[in-house]
Length: 584
Image 1 (tube, helix red, strand yellow):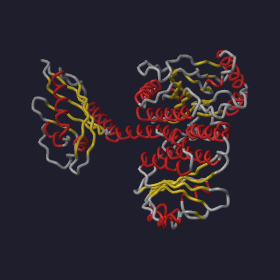
Image 2 (cartoon, rainbow, N blue to C red):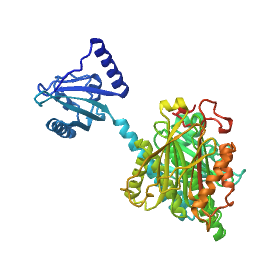
Image 3 (tube, helix red, strand yellow):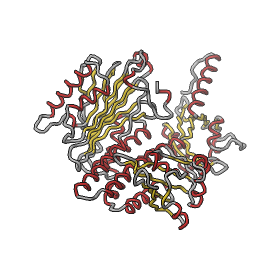
Image 4 (tube, one colour):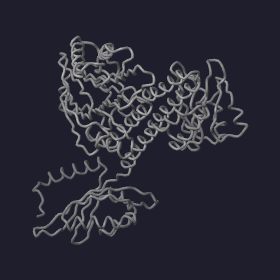
């Protein structure tokens, strides 16, 4: 039965105003279709989504066909008829074509209303332009896939025996991943010699001769990166000419309109730079910069290995350092929003060739919540380290694309391991620090976590009372259909959270429970003594051998009370661009 809630005229006006504000804020359009007369009443926002703002409409439902893509019209009609026949809800997504040829994606939701006799008489609903949201999700997934491709690059660089061979690997992957026109390695042999270049790009003989050996003060971004260690991401010719007068002429000769250069670092110094060119203008996104930085880290360690292969032992050490650099290039500095202080540590295993797949990660999600991840890929070799990088970046992409809970993120990651044939086993614990409005006033937070076979984290209150957060599901890579669970616990002001890999508690010939008990006692004692978080992490690691038998990754978070200033020991709040409102 159709009926209106009894409202006074004033109440109806307030309700309409609230609805208008809500739909405007959400970018949602409204429509109302009379099934008996075919009259369609839709608001200006819906009409604009269909590209029909400047057209004369009949006022009937057939008007929608003017905007819907011809190939999608049958699907929309079928969805509408099914909702009417079954008395259910409409949930359809389809393309619209604007008069200028622009194609957008619209999602329509609707509900059928019936009269007293049960006959369908009206359908009301909403339209939402979801083009940008879908494109953003696809881009996030593409970025994660691109980072996962570094597994193959690490393997190919590990087989490269010459600088030219390494450059060929980098050029091939940069072209496939970024659509680049060429790659140049600038090599700084020492602190005084000119910069020599190794080129894999379509340059004429005169241009090749001009860039063969360059003075250290030459006005080119790639030379500055090789000399100073600065990175440059240049979107167009005007920008390069402004920042490096005279460089635009060489770029034009080379067919380059945009480019970037990032330093190549060995363990002790800047050994050169990696320069990449584009034939079109390009705005370098943060995801591009992260990818190129990781590619440069792999390249630098490959060049170091090639330059130091005097003995089999040196070669083995260089291969291990390359894998360790892949790990360290992805173990980025954590954000520190508001009154949260985050500290990370990574300690490699004793055997140089036995680089493993331990990792940590900390980042802000799309809603501004702080995410913490700790994981361990099985194995101790370059493949384990590269797989670690792939899983780390896939999980980041999944979190940003879906905004799901920790359990939902691990479920999707497990399916990706199977679907992408990664062929690995891994333990991963992912956690999210949340704070509702009413919790903010009390200074408390909620920790939501999901554990795929990883050692349990420690939660410590200000008095040093330690709680092991038990509850684990199956590790990743075994059965992607298994059900995963979210668990929650309240974090009181002053709480400390510690996530770690098993290398922290394992000892040869010792029971794992004994190592965990020792860690619980140590952390409780240090918190009770009032140790700052940085010192606490250092003291925990000090109990280990200088080079332990297994890698150790550690991430700690302290939720400082919000009714006091952020303490000096936590340093300043640090968040990425776009999250200033959570910086505190």
